[in-house]
Image 1 (cartoon, rainbow, N blue to C red):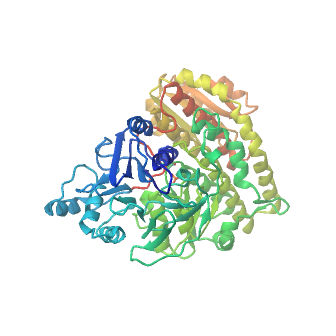
Image 2: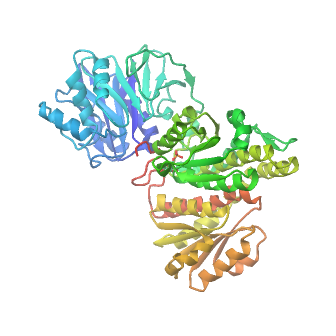
Image 3: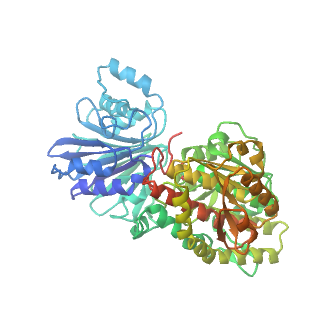
Length: 608
Ligand code: G6P
């Protein structure tokens, strides 16, 4: 959600800002803008639409200032037009602000500012920040920002530029991520490590309630109460190639095809084959207690929530621990019962989703031990939880999550194994699961070879208006995830259901215009799912089936069968989801839609 970049150094800032914005465009892409200090003046250039629109507008201008800020927006307050695009500035045009988050009391602040004579030009909540800072400014930007933020309720990651203090950028954080990129004779502030990796690998992180002043030579971190905070410089853990398309037409396709490696990376160094156990350093101190947990809440949003559902099935089946999976946005507000030895496990690719973070904080407040299953190293959820497991999928840029999902499920399988071995599961079952895990990367590769067949199916079904996805057991969350992928990027209405539930409603929708995707692998419910397929066919529904290799029977029933290798039921989602990712991808491409940046969505949702 909204990308923020700021630069102070000796090089022209504009190309650095634009490059940073492009690397963060997946965070928000409805409008963009920059503010630069140039010959003692503040220049602000904004444009509705994508960064390339902004670039076009900038192409005729020669801006050589070496201090500037840039923003790519995901609109909350006010239409995504040029006026509402950031940066916003004060009455005097002296102070420019970019912001990620929501100022919740902006209406009352706005009224007060208007009474004091400020004239506001936009419909945004952000603009009031520029005027508030102006109100408090008496020659000390840092102090003015601090005072202004004391008036504010809500969430923010902000960067502020002031014409009168042209050597610095002020940034502050409450709820929306910010990092400082530490260069030589130059410094950066950004909402995302991807924006600075082209210039430096050294970063410091802001925590909530902190601010930073960056100049060419320094980055001074303080609390909002004006106390200096020492910060450890950390290293970004990925390379620039990992955030480039590497010859693929879209990030999403690249990320789908990376899965043989990312599934392997999620388990690398974590399998103890002899003992038939998984070793997870980040939760080592909690494993014993977790294996005897009274209850585990898994909380997450979107695709990560689907991974959580699979985790529930795994943990209950093998580790015999009661698990409840809950949307983070519900968990945080509904007063869940947390007694002693209750754990909250938050699953989040970005580690920044605000609802998931709030659920972690609520869990903590109620006395739960919190664990994170995150992808982004150093992200807020990873830092705020008591322990956790990194999934090591590398940067995921496509807005629709793919490789993170399969890596999350892999990590959950490892956690399950670690816990089950503490309890009743013997080493031979552990070894059995390890063998199945080790086969996964090559099996994923095999599934990816169905790509051509899936492209054909996509061409045949791309104009359909609705899809139903059905599965049972471990494949039910896969059905949900398949439907979500299709909705997100192809804008086709799709629903996922437990296959047997079809009879309780969705069956009324079935006719020749309702393709039904069955995940019909050979587990304990296979025969029942076959009956469900018959029920669909009897109503002229068109069936696409994901089935296990060797299943010839299903050919007689389904119009299309996509074969995937056999594995253990708990690992099947990792293989079964891939054809569904590819199906959504190809349909979206055939419909000429923007696969990597689908409308209205954002990769990391840092507002409620
Ligand atoms: C957004 C993204 C989804 C993602 C969800 C949760 O909605 O578009 O792809 O699944 O957030 O994100 P997280 O980073 O917490 O996994």
